[in-house]
Image 1 (tube, rainbow, N blue to C red):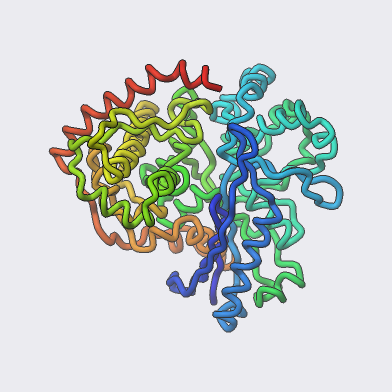
Image 2 (tube, rainbow, N blue to C red):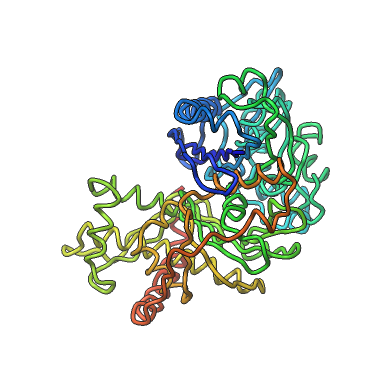
Length: 490
């Protein structure tokens, strides 16, 4: 008995094959490219999502034909908020507008005017990254496209459509659209109508651990998977990551160091705090919610500085950063390369290096990036705690979790130990496989979504914490002082 987890990320698709003992048997990846045709824009072609997924699945079929023939369930995880617009016969009408697209700032204001109680209904501020404002933008700037829309799907749910023919989504991903009544776990007709759409434009809703259908015959044959393998509703990438890390009980938390950065805390009920730009979403499991602070650029900042400085790769640049003492001519970095969400909700915010001299080295810039992302997480932790959120153990997941230096910086800035669990680098794909298992076997959540063993714990360094407390003050003052200039530059 085997299970597959498919994670549609921003930079690539990852597929994992997991056995009945929850061991990773194999994995395959395929890259994706983001298009930025104009300032603030971020788009991808849904057809490229499908090609990447198909390529990864066929790679696994080639290497693991016997195991793929015994797959009982497939789970889906994906980048949240993306607007995938479909017309007649499921034709894609335009490139998907992604989560880190900032063009719809004016539409956010308009949406909250149209629905004065939107924050109470959705539990969130209207932000450009969310799906609903994107549709208002399309209606205003591309009216012919808007009139042709018959369905709006989130990225992973477009893959589901291609796999099964079903229009379906889960609660956690749908909570990031601004169309969901998050407390009721149901579409809000008022919010949907406010964007000129009807409930018929929305997919059917499921809990993440429920099955939504089975594979089309031709897809099952191409992938070497049984036709009766159930496809689970799945989850948005962060909720899927939580399922994979066992972050399912109130107070459990994790930091995700992916393209974006997420501070995720599970809650026992619906606890909105939109004023602090905290996201309040449904979890991917029944009867559970969660809060998140989200920064739009995390590990992507490190990839960017590698390109900027001409370093060979991230590993070699991190090695240079490790040689730099925290106080040795390290600039302050504002990591707002794609604008920012928590706590600023400012799509116009920009990245900044402050305090460079002739002595500033490439390694110092790399360390500055690691510190700047950590300071942004500290801002997120601050607003989560202001909301009365209990934060207990904090695990670390995502590609950035591989850096021991970054872990020590984060622990010291946040003043708390961080747990690195076995398999933490698998992230949402492993959680998606767990949701597939739940859908296929109907087991108890507590039996499947357990916390992996702790591989190591990173403790704060007292001297570093003192130094970073002072530097965090400078970081926050820089944003405050530069904010008017960010807006003016756009």
